[in-house]
Amino acid sequence: MRNKNKRINVIREIISSNKIASQDELLKLLMAKGFDLTQATLSRDLKAMKVVKAPDANGEYSYRLPSEVVQTEQQRLPYMAGVSVSADFSGNVVVLHTRAGYASSLAYRIDDEADDVIIGTVAGEDTVICIIKEGVTKKQVLESLCSFIPSLIKD
Amino acid sequence: MRNKNKRINVIREIISSNKIASQDELLKLLMAKGFDLTQATLSRDLKAMKVVKAPDANGEYSYRLPSEVVQTEQQRLPYMAGVSVSADFSGNVVVLHTRAGYASSLAYRIDDEADDVIIGTVAGEDTVICIIKEGVTKKQVLESLCSFIPSLIKD
DNA sequence: AATTCGAGTGCAAAATTATGCAAAAAAGTT
DNA sequence: AACTTTTTTGCATAATTTTGCACTCGAATT
Image 1 (cartoon, rainbow over the protein chains, first blue to last red):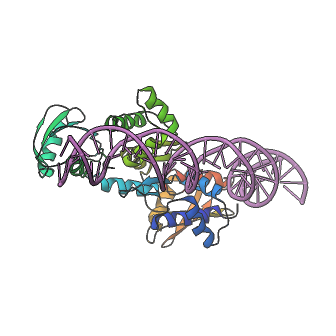
Image 2 (image 1 turned 180 degrees about the vertical axis):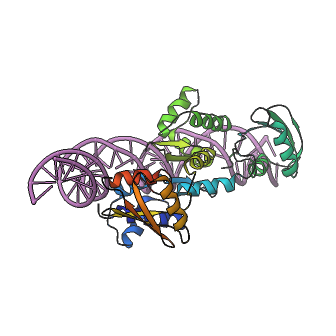
Image 3 (image 1 turned 90 degrees about the vertical axis):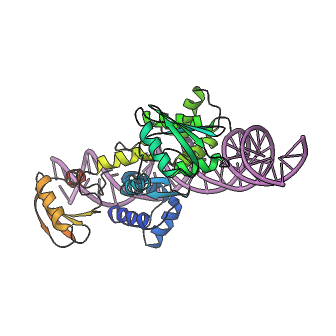
């Protein structure tokens, strides 16, 4: 063991302050700092540290410390977190399914936040029907909904 | 687009209730459910969903939804989260480095929780020196410290 | 209705990451 | 100090994931 402890700490430092997209990239930084190791070892280190390679809002992958994932996700899920929703379109209507009992709160939120693309909603127990404003595309609707419903994806 | 929306939802469901270790594994489940796609598409889906492949406590990799990562990590970091600590051993002494100002609170915690392996500590500003009990191995010390200092790794 | 535009995919190849095995180093024992 | 056990690591290779390119199909536009 040449210096695993020191190395682990440096790795933590590097990935918390830089955007690292691959192990080879990280490897080069470490070597530049004088560490002598291979990608195989790095792979094992990252696994032991429970570091995660996660796609950011931009769609780019980078390594994150577990604690950072917490922060990041919390920031990204300010509202409606865990309300697991699906959205399906048909003509000028979008139907949302959510957990039983959450439909009305979801509908309320939509009325409040997506009024630029939705002209009205009706909520049942686990379903919300939204009427899309004329001239608004599905993409725009999704864009808007995604901004506050984390379980929807926008690509 | 054959059924991307439905597929995404099913993926979410599968990875939240099963332990999926690879895209091929997930692919087979999806195909069994009647979806027709390739691993390439799955890779894109997972990226869009911001799904993350994370090592669990057991050291096994599996896919997680962002919201699950939050929960999981929060559970795993009950105390001392973010106090970023390094540990170095020398003989019967272990030296911990932490963020400036946190040493004394860390030392207090160690006195409280690790008294089965540590006979005493002294804290400076960002450093804690701990004296290891005779007959206790480094491994045991790490084991103990790791239980409440998440930034330490035990492998 | 014809045309344009972009999302969604498959294919195949490139890129990246994980791991079995064996050797070296460190830690723990006697 | 000699010996045993556990860790750590490299090498080579397997396994897994990502991506460029081309094509299809439906939606939006003219």
